[in-house]
Amino acid sequence: MDYTHSLDVPLLKAFVAIYETGSVTAAAERLTLTQPTISYTLARLREILNDRLFIREGRTMVPTRRAQDCYEKFRAILHQIDELVDQQRAFNPTLSNRRFRLAMSDIGALAFLPPLLKYIQHNAPGIEIETMQAPPETLPEALALGKIDAAVGNLPLIGKLTESALLLKEEYWCLLSSSHPTIKTQLSLETYLAARHAHVSSELTGHKHLESILRNAGIVRKIALQVQQFTVLPHLITSTDLLVIVPGTIGRMFEGYGGLKLLPLPFEVPPLEVRVHWDRQQGQNAPQAWLIETIRKTMSNL
Image (cartoon, rainbow, N blue to C red):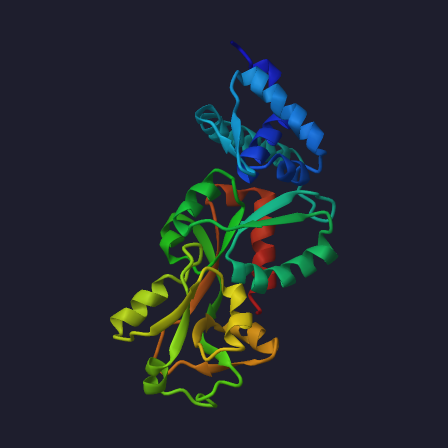
């Protein structure tokens, strides 16, 4: 069946939105449409493509094999259309209502989004930002396919596969309760090794290399708590005797909440590099170039 004449841009956008969000409701919110409209659009897609496309499992819409085959093609078509439109008209951020998708960790969003959003609010109020998390090894492909517009973080694994620009270098610090029962203003290596520690073990951050650095240096910690997110640390560390290693920017932010303090680590750890990454080809279009420059402008002075 030749169904190409039946597929239009709104249908493709709805398909991609459902695929990427796993939800009719979330797809409707992304496209600023009503849920019944997206449901009707999905019914049309199913009829045109003669496939269920998405099967509900719990609260998630899981794509069928046919949907998986269609996704990359439809996403590429939409990206090509965006490029053609961008070439025909100059990108004006003050008038644009474009949505940019950024990959960053939970602490990346906590530290880097406020200055970015403040700048956009005053200079490009129609621009929308959506953040997501993904394993670092999947980011080069996501950038190349246009699933995301940029990735921000300490991502050494993808450095050679993308274009990137240095935003800042950060030192690691030790975060602990300001009322810690035994550690006051100084932290010796002996005290550090004897203490109990919290460890962030998420596969979605770029800090996995820290564990191998410590192991190679012969530093073995007593891990009493493992968590998946940095953002839960302030509430957990304040009332316990746990120590945790954090990047300086987020550590100073947590310290400002009260009940916490930062101390230098009693051993050397190489500073981490926070970079913005983008695809070589994608970065050549005007909206992408504006986004990268805006990220560099707002995040380099943290």
